[in-house]
Amino acid sequence: MLQTPRQPELDQSFDERVDILFRELELAVKWDRPSILLAIYSSGYVAADAQGKLATKLRELDQTATLYVVNEQNADIPLHLSEHPNKTKTVFFVTNLQFGGGADKRNAYRALNIRREYFVDYRIRAVFWLTEKEAIALPKHAPDFWAFRHRAVEFVEPPKAEQIALVARAVAWADFENRTLREDTEAKIELRQALLDDLPEGDETLAARAELLYTLAGLYWVKSDYEKSIENWREALQLAERLENTRLQSGSHNGLGIVYADLGRYDDAIAAYQRASALDPKFAAPHNGLGNVYRDLGRHDDAIAAFQRAIELDPKFAYPHNGLGNVYHDLGRHDEAIAAFQRASELDPKEAAPHNGLGNVYDDLGRHDDAIAAYQRASELDPKNAAPHNGLGNVYGELGRHDEAIAAFQRASELDPKDAVSYGSLAGLYRKLGREAEATEQIKIARELMAKENEYSRACIEAISGNVDEALALLKVALEKKQVPLEWERRDPDFDFIRDDPRFKALVGEG
Image 1 (spheres, rainbow, N blue to C red):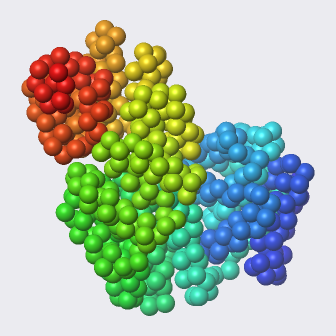
Image 2: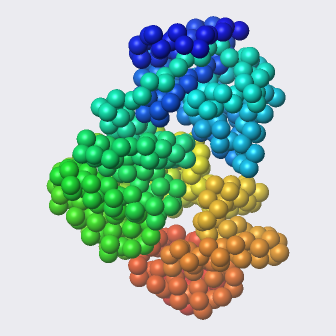
């Protein structure tokens, strides 16, 4: 293996040292061989700057730099990297080595030592970003892995004042697009939080602090850590006001609106969205948010107007088209719903939601093959989304394909363990199949999660449980609020248990 003396890189410029790492990786990609590189740093800002520049250069090789933050759950670095589905197109940036392994911080080092051959066998390319403390510990705790390294490069100079602010702002917005927010969320949070903690106080770093807080708030929202999300957005808003940054103020109010809507605090959400729009009248997102809230409240005309206003402001914004599709579906305007979902998909071909929406419409129309294809496409685009699997479960259930329906509902509950709907649907299917013990178990889980569900979902659970009066009372409220299309209420298999009750028929207009 190549050996590198301890100091010579310090005589080279920062960019030259980044280029050393890049050239090593370029050869590894060219010859399809592994590469184990060590980048030793003393400042997180210097490391983040180097990572950003190296990631940019790697894109020239059609390689993606993926941050791998070591913790107790993924301390076995070689095993996890060997199982990555796209190893040949990925360079792993491994960080946080000293914190891997829970109470025994050496577990990550041990895994490297024991499974070092994985890097060769699976042709893994990785850059280990090491603090000086980690660089000292690595040969001590993983001597065999240490001997496997190909190159070590040092970035131990202190950061410059202007570098700190530039790096913090660049990192804040890196990989912060809607579709990538749910990827490596913990790693993104840890990186931003570390930079925020090390950010010096002062007017010159105020903008960087505001932007780190803003993007942290968005990432905490993805994790459903609403308390931290609100806290960070409020702090970002305060700093944005000091900076007189209207755009960031508007964005922070919009972010607060998103969280309040998720919490069911609709009045607060509407106020936040309206404030965001007042601050930045050309900002489309608050109108999209208002559309979603109005739809949740059953204010369909207001929802349509809000979505249409968002489209006027940003014709290439896919989300309001998807929102229109949902409202048109709620109203039974199937042709308009299909057109809206298809337009959303055209504008953002990688977004799963329009395909899920199309699946719902096709299911309503009895176009089962189209529905299955749409749900499967949604699942391909967003493998961690439970909704398409719930949709598939409904279609398979209607077709009498019970084993496939059970598998789909089980997958949905695995992906979203806090969603009562999947457990309720599974309970209903088990009851129809005479599997009462399993049905009772699923109903118990669903009941524990029902507090956050709307009246319609709770009516389904009560119907499955045999609580007819409660189910009908909740369904009446759901109908008044227009929470789901009437066509679906009439044929929802969860209501098969009360379908012959005259009161049910009177509610949904049957018989």
